[in-house]
Length: 320
Image (cartoon, rainbow, N blue to C red; front, side, top):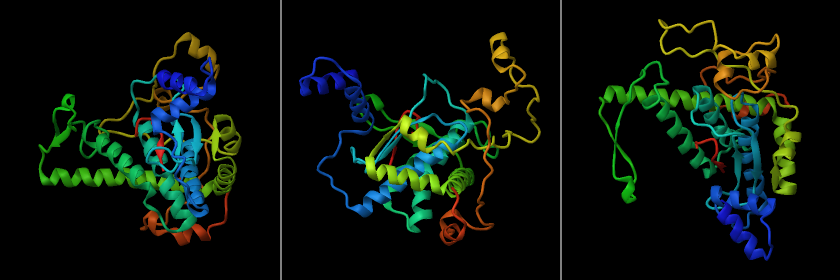
């Protein structure tokens, strides 16, 4: 990244690497160079703005996500726009709740298209691919499905050091494969529903974000914080159990003296200890997915609802 920033600085004739060069270098490394020759019409700009706004708004409302640091509708690489969600510090592991939040905001762009335009586009293909990959790893590698259990399914094969992609060899039956597919679909559908609830609840915030994106094309972290000021974090999810016979302890992790002093008389739930949750101020969901319907089948329902307020590794942007 610093090499890229140094090259940009040299090309501009400057002597020092400034914040603008670093910012552009991060964008180039993460999302690719800006496509200045790619001109979008007004309709596609608006679709892209809603798509990226959906990603950003859902990420802002999820309890265990990292901060949204940038949203842009300027094309870069293969993406028409992107949303950047970056951790504030180095992280070496990810909790189940954090992965579920990643699934939700990955689906945010697709859901925004469904709610607003009643007709999804092909722009969400990369988001769906990433969400499916995360959900499949949760089931087959991370032991985060109670039906499948804490076992590793599938054997990796290939020679990555020779530039070949890693493949997977199935070592389980067709019956187990069917269960895996059901669990993956269940996780993605749950994420789809969570994104839908957030975007219905904060539709006015989404519209405000889109207007600002159409005006400025790129919004930084401070500008986004202003837009998202009415948004509150969602309540904690129901505690996940790997088995009904294995209940969790009512006692969370022990607190150091420094932690006790910082909390005072307050209390932190174990899930918030394990993940980077924001201070508790849960939002009451306004909409619910109609019974026996999928989110993608409820466009008319969403429009008729009263208006209320376009991995993945968290350091990677969500492409639109």
